[in-house]
Length: 385
Image (tube, rainbow, N blue to C red; front, side, top):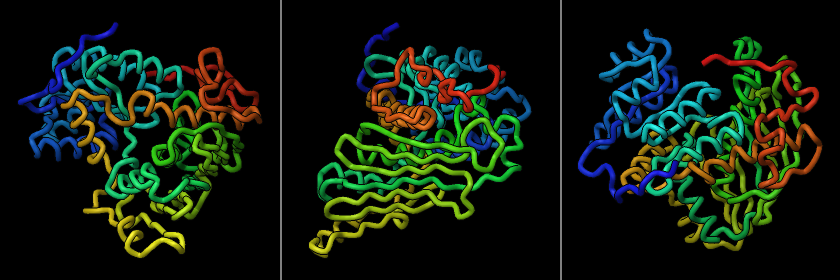
């Protein structure tokens, strides 16, 4: 049901009341510290936390000074009426928890992968407000930070010339013990393999820098691990601006690295890191005819603001106060999931998949395996909340 328009500054004169859903490593190690930093700046206050494990959520609340611990999300929403709900639970729970929070009038900040399918994403988006929120955004913290902001601006302004060739790789290593955990490597509980669960951050950053993609071709394989999903994939992507990119997502690579390289007419931009980046992780190599002064200006990233949950959350809070749709929500948040869905369809069908092609009625719209022979689960599985 459409909501009434909100005021320009709906949280004027007060802190934003936040609740953390999920008492695991993400909630404890990323969401709470970012919220605590903003609390110290007078922006937020954490009023509650939720987890089905009562002992875990009570311990987290005691440690962080959070006043209310819950094991029931609906009860927390009704009693505490938070303005913002951060979600750090398994992907199969994201849709229902996001919808519940939005219906309660709270903005949502949900960990990746956002939801297991485009159908789920569209169901969440349908619950958003129409003017001023609440909105649901995805944790894509690799988009944020001083160097990423500078490179995005240079590309958008055309200072580096046309983007021509790009490479995007998330080549990590996960051993047999990692996949011995029952829910890993399964479509029902993870939604997908390394393309979905690991490489999504670098692919999202690539799209954020280069803009809309047009078509994709791909291959996927199970080369080492006995899993339902893939353990490696490769893709060729053509962007609307004409740039061509290769994408590799792997959990088979002993030398782990996350990397993006974009060759433009006037410079090459490279990012090399693992799980997060700062100014020192970026390099801009100018073409021979670029002056030293211009190249130096390109490399001036300003004070180092690393990619982080804090950097994204600070911007999200600003969007909430302005009543504006935040980055990595709506169509902007959907684009990475659409590319990943198209990657799986291209790999499993051996066809070229174009942007906008996958919608209701397409088997890949509701599940990334698309019921493809040899890839779909042998039987339907139900994952308990």
